[in-house]
Amino acid sequence: MAKFINPAIFALAAIGTLTLVRAIVPKKATRQDPKPRVIVDRPSRSSGKSFIVTGGTSGVGQAIATQLAREGAAAISVVGRSAERGAGVVKVLQDLGCKAQFIKASMDDVEEVKAVVGKHEAKFGVASGLVNSAGDTSRGTLAEQTVEDWDRLFAVNARAPFILTQMATNSMKREKIEGSVVNIITITSHGGQPYLCGYAASKGALVTFTKNAAHSLRSDRIRCNGINIGWTYSAAEDKLQVRETGDVNWLEKAKEKVPFGKLVLPEDIAELTCFLLSENSGVCTGSVIDFDQMVMGGYD
Image (cartoon, rainbow, N blue to C red; front, side):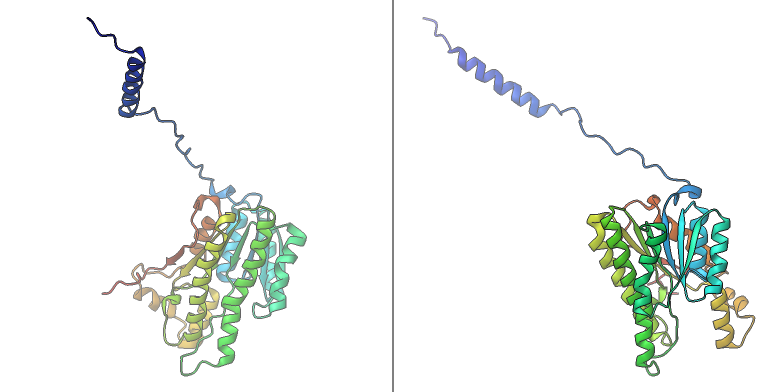
């Protein structure tokens, strides 16, 4: 007599086979790949944004402010000590079609530093970017550096960037602005020459602060990066070298000592700074870039 198999068994077998086939045959991809990121042209990548630039009345800071204006910045607050130089920079920025103001502040004066962000916001609204470019490069060895010099170096090179970053980013967070902070540091932060004891130490502190701030601000999509600039030619550097060496031709001799036959220029640093301030730098944060022709860790 033929034995009849329960139809339920056939159903279960069919389901099992179908499940096995589904497990073996790859599913059709459903993910959506990221769309190519649009790279904004340099003449417009800062368009509509306002910025605060300390040390903006000369050298690297002035070059950064000028480059931001060329790239379409809506407004810039130039921070410094010299009202005369500040007025000159403001005129240059305005001629480039950028609104600008000079804010007088000494970076070793806590109250003057605290007032900077408020003065910018009163005129231009919350800043999208902050550049801490002001710095004190006073020299001194371990044996000779005074406590007063040490305190001033840390006040200018570490405390002021902390205050400004704290206040500027608190405003960015409040207004949901995905902003950017760039700290102008120095290759000397790796250790430096013996005659730059306090300067190297204070800039080393700024390196650590840059990374800590970047980590703290990630969830708010605010980025913080730094640039360790190498030997840079500027009017201030020329004045310093002539005073220290007594040689008006120091630059030509300096060029002979470096691999590329030239020193870093403020405009070079401005280009990188503006990139880091812009959306073109993507999610880059917590980076401290060595902008120098000497490679740390390399030996001849």
